[in-house]
Image (tube, rainbow, N blue to C red; front, side, top):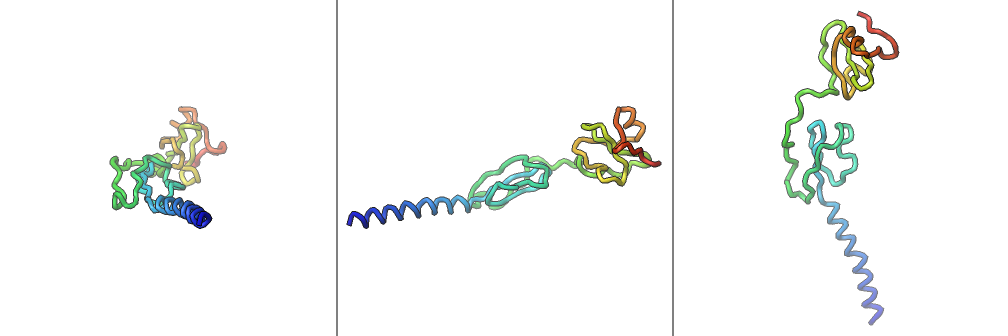
Amino acid sequence: MRNLALSVALIAGLFLPMGAIHAQSADTVTATCKDGTAFTETKRSGACRGHGGMQSWGAAGAGATGGVAAPSQPAPATSQRATPSPGGAGQVWVNTASKVYYCPGTRWYGKAKQGSCMSEAEARAQGARADHGKACTS
C-alpha cells in the first residue's frame, strides 16, 4: 500500500509540471518592431529579425488582447535606411559615421544606417572619401 501511494505521488509529481509548462507555451507574446511592424508569436526568439530590432514588448497572455494592438506611435514617414529619391546628377549617399560616400547605382547607395544625400563636391568638402577610391562619373 505504501509503495502504491509513493508511486502515485511520483507520477503525479511528474505530470503536474508538464501541464504547467504546456499552459505557459500557449501564451502569446506581442511586440512592436523599430520599423513599426507588429509581431505575435508564442516565443520571443527572432521577434524582430530583419525589422531593425525591438522597439517594445506587448503584454503576454493567452489571447488576452485578442490581437495585436496598433503601435501607440506611428512609424516614421521617412526611414534613413530607405534608398533616397534621385536628387539629380552628382548626388551621392554619404555614410556620416564612416565618412565614405557611394555613387548612385552602387550596392551601398542609400543603405547606411546614418547617412544623407548630397552633392559629391559637398561630401568631399565635409571630409568624406569615395568608396574604394572611385569617384562618381558625371
